[in-house]
Image 1 (cartoon, helix red, strand yellow):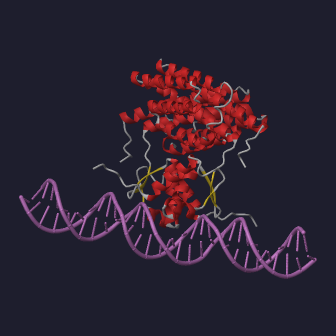
Image 2: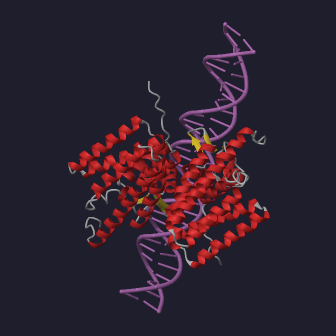
Length: 226
Length: 226
DNA sequence: GTCAACAATATTGTAGACGATAAACCGGCC
DNA sequence: GGCCGGTTTATCGTCTACAATATTGTTGAC
């Protein structure tokens, strides 16, 4: 019999609501009525309530007294801020990864890189983006810096809605591939300084691409967004 | 008549408990029984409950299902991690501060620096530490990077218990003064790169001092800690 | 037709009771 | 004396009900 610790309602509430926000089933600005969510997920209002409190602390939800909670809307300027903070922290993590990576871990990173290359050549930008996330995730694990990891995860969650807006910037995917290659090379060489620098530049480039994408959106805005 | 928005119980609960932890009235490892806290602060258990949830998300409290919450204990290794993360983020903030500081703001920074110098010459290490905090705080305000500011504040809160352990390291205060001077100079000169670098080095030095203090603690542990 | 006062409604904030769980306790057995 | 089983207790997790508040809708005067 597997030891399946029965999770408490509050925990599942937190995860379900969080997941719904990350999956964009709940959109920014949307009201989060406690009773509604309770029924939707088959949970009690108390559970939803504390979940919302935690999510607010995490920055995914905004709530005002007696007026309820909404999914926090993050505009372009803030998305850039978040990316900058991520850059600072992931740069730290990359430094740690360069210090601690084992040969096997390096091989794994290089494997991911190769698969990214294959997706790039196949023109599969979405698949590339997934591998991108996997690479960053793996670097965090190698770094073993739990404080940085926690913060980065939180920042990444806040930016889910903006994560795909850069991949269509012309030439971006090619440069992205190159940036990742430099990061992995530095980690493989245990060059801490270079790894930190490469990661910082990489995410700065992402921020720049996001600015461009946002600027292009402003000239021909997306009609889907009512 | 001033518009004193009557705060809700949950909000006051959050602030009171948080304050109590930061003031070290509630010590690491100490149990946080909901009913006790409710009576102590004259609030309902529900309010305390959500306050604890938020504080857990913030990293100040640790709680396990059905076993209650405790003030999270942060050991030396984690304190160093937290300082490193702070360094990365405050470095970013210093870069922004260098970019955006007005002449008046620069004067204010220099004023704080002068007062630090005075305290240093008077041998008033505690006063110096206060001005230290004020300087960092002021830099954050000048930077105007709210994402970084939020994270830094959270990290600083987690390290309150370790913040004074470095000031007795021999020669530390003199070097600290010099490090701050370099930061302010770089900001005054609007040299972003230099400001970021100076802040990174400063906090790395603090981390180093903390390691030393911890090592010295291990050779002759403090008898006060039962 | 517009605006202000007021009533009705929806939703959150708070209180208290009850069931669920884990730790502490107790008694019997070896 | 130490260990295992059940029992008790403290505390948390959840539910229900009610009070407080903001928002919406309605009425009436001008």
